[in-house]
Length: 130
Image 1 (cartoon, rainbow, N blue to C red):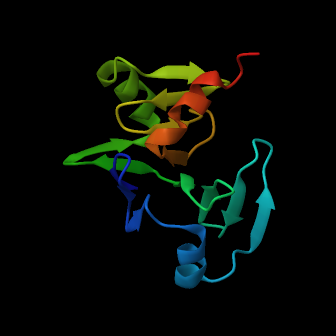
Image 2: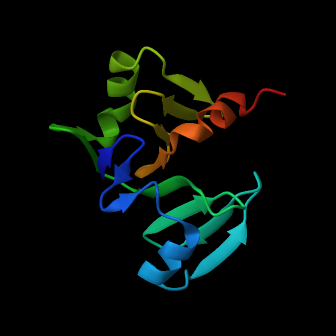
Image 3: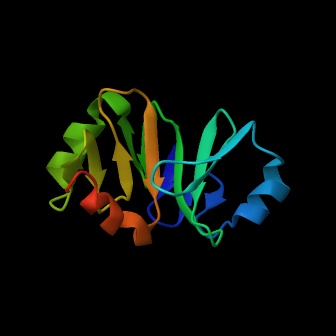
């Protein structure tokens, strides 16, 4: 995964709408509304989650290595790297969430990593709190 935090994952910008995604990739093999009210478009190798208005919230894919700028972090070291380098990182419901790099992942579920849009961080902060 090549990450430009809050801007782009690999060649996918966070400005991508659900309609643009359909034009680019065609119909997903599975589409559903998930438990937190986002529309999931699952292409097998990557899952996109959108708000009802079509705004992209999250991109989840398997990443054995996360590249941020000129730093490459293996998944096995990602939690340690985040905790050591992001003073605003936090944990919710088993996920490590990095505010600095806009990432969420469960260290016990290799190699799935979710890149986040900046506007969805408050929702992650409330996860599991009441």
